[in-house]
Every structure is written in structure tokens, then in C-alpha cells.
Length: 165
Image (cartoon, rainbow, N blue to C red; front, side, top):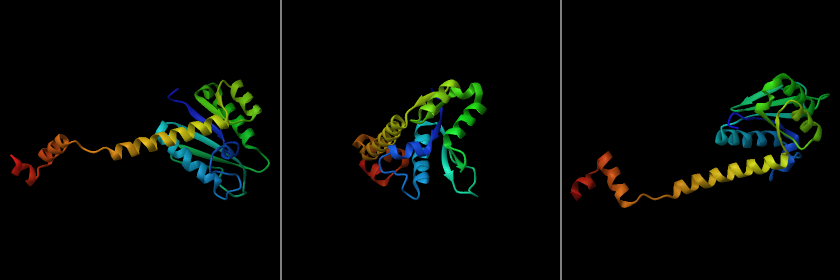
């Protein structure tokens, strides 16, 4: 499953993430930032689809491993995901579709893609971001043992190490 990429229905996912809401002005950018960190930690890539894009906005923007697709009015993110699956054809099986919408799920399955609900992905996202934050904090809190300090002083040289011998 390591090469797995995600196709995400962005506005379907946002309400499932604690602290995000579709009423927020920057909800899409906040989701993109969370997804960037998720991709970095999980070594995955993501395509996230947002509908109701204002006219004149670029259709796609790249943010590291996250490609955001902004769907103009008159089309939906669901339709854009269907088209993307169609483009992928047989390689769709290397993708996981993230949406709680039954039609999106059916389309993903028809193309052989994996599928996960927005709720489950929100949980995976929260777990991934929390776990690595805890790991980083644990690493930062580790203190060196006296023998490790001695070793470092020897390696990098210190007047203190020489006076002890």
C-alpha cells in the first residue's frame, strides 16, 4: 500500500475535521496545510478537489505533495473525481478515494480504486499528526547520559574533557 495516493473530496472532508468548518474563510487552505503535513509524514501524495471555485481562480495549484483542484461552478468535485478516475483507468487501483458520498464510492470501486469514508480519513489524519508530534516531543525531551556527554566531549574536544584526564 506504500505507493497509494489519495483522491479527496475536500468539502466532504472539511466538516469531519475537528477545528475546521465550511463557514471559515480559509477552510480550504487550512485543509491543504494539514494534508501537506500528512503527506510529509506518511510519504503519500494527495489530490484534493474543491467545488464552487470562484471564476478566474487557477484550476489546479501544487502545494508540495498536495495538488489542489478547484472546480468551477457548473461542475462538482464528485464529477471531477469521476473524470480523474476515468483518466487514471487501470492505475486507479493505486489510489484511495476519500469521500462519504455513495456515488463517489461506487465510481471508485468501478475503476478498482480503494475507498475510505471522510470520517475514517479524518481519524487517520488526526492520528498521523498527533503521533508524530508526540514522537518529536519525546525525542526533544530525551537527556544525554553522562557517558554520552563524555563521548561527545571527546569527539568535539573540550577543555573540560582534557582537564579531567
